Image (cartoon, rainbow, N blue to C red):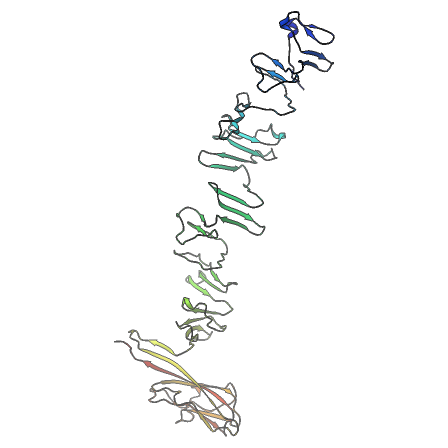
Length: 492
């Protein structure tokens, strides 16, 4: 290891004499040397008188109050070709640079030109780069190209992969943070805050189960800049505006309403699912021949209800259907039975109504219609001694009705009588002769014994049930008349 050697040639130049006690003296009074010299075999010591400092050269004097014989002042330049060891503080005044590199490539100074004063590191134009790495890697060539702007590079501990670095610079337009390999990870215990001109613009946090992106209070998050701003009053940091396209390659969940203000395209065979377990699905299906729009109803109800928007929260109490069924409700949601339904029961097409008849309106649009209706009444036989015959009210067959059929069902079995006849009060067995009396027995037009329905009824009529083989005790018959009637025009 080299040592700093101050080569003093006073003996040769000034004619010093050396004494055994180490003091030096020259005969001329203006050349008195007051410094003591000594050597102990390992070091040579120059020691000025107490209170003096040692000055080399005469171009100046101390400006830092040197006042001890252990102090040294060099009034000119100092050149050291070996290592300098500083065992205490190195003080460099304002605006005085520490220069590194043979061509003054890097300068470090505390600059009073800054407002306020600040430490400044100046990089030379041969690289404009500052590299931070481990001491062991300081001789590694990290091959950073010459930079256009001063750039800080922080290398990883793996010097074998020189591209493992993060850099920071300003390109005269924007600040730039870059990573040579991998991702750019921002990490802080409380989350990451991105600011715009000193104002918090975006906070990113994670609690281990979810990551949250939170704009400033009162702001909404905008993705893209294709539109200047919201047209729907977004004003919360829970709101998001996507200014162009959004692509979802998996399921999207909407826990509230979705408003669409432009045509929306859903790919073939991709469904809109409604309900917690995809109870209902809308899909454009290429499985159909040709392709077609399909509504799939869930097994919970097997039905689709068409109603006014204001009535969507009304319980229309439709039971679970065996086959997919469309219900169209009236505008009067207080009467939930006001509906028409459409289905297929695996044998026949079925049109049903919850109340009233089925009207087929004329094409003229003047209010005229042909109406398909049913009317049901029950007749009940008394207990012992029972009744020989029972009849419906006189209006179960309305005046003007064109009867197309009469059907009955025994809802409570009768006793004592062997069978019953079903008629119209004139022909006792027109609609059925000697039919059964056990519960569940049904009669239809197939049981009729005479032709009926040739012309509309000219007066209201009744249906009779007459016991055969004795009075009937306790039986109950539900009797339904199936008929047509017409409605005249209501406008010219």
